[in-house]
Image (cartoon, rainbow, N blue to C red; front, side):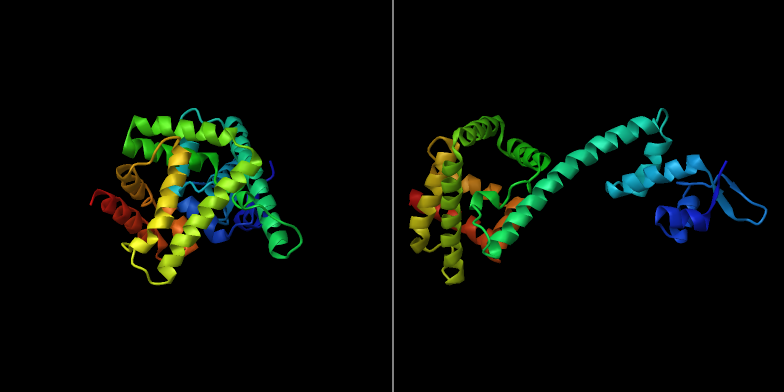
Length: 257
């Protein structure tokens, strides 16, 4: 049986000797045996276990959890590899889509070819993240939100590519218009923002397939407090996330005056 010293395994796996020593100390990867010279030696089983450790680590699983997974009764290394391959293949396809989007954006910025705004985010938001958004909405706003999401999904699927592009271009124009109010120093409560806010409310109503009442519009502002929405709006203009929420709520209050 071929064995590797700790230095040889470190070079083979691309990790540090210190890392292997640490794995030994915490019981994650023990050597096959320790020689009379007190050197650690690793065989095929340890090499395969190290492969699993490194794969799980690349999948962002903490070391403590990796040990529990590998030492669980019934752990099947072959089955684990097959599942990991499936997961990584899904990620590879998603990353390939992101690379295509980045390449299109680079070409667009260089003036080499036109890029539609609807293509800016292709492949970036994962199905898992979309599902997370939807679950968050249903959890916070009840089963009625589930019906609204499904209706919105069907409406979007029925749109042609040109209609989707126009739809997203309209939203961008609205958000840019509201962000311009922030840049100009208008307070979010300013009535001067009303035309753009009304335009935004109508856009939301069309996406819902029903009228967006002032009360519903104010509730929507609460949804925009979600960290991912905040990140999106802050990318448009620093401070825009809180500004938009405050402006939407101020508009809704004015409708009841």
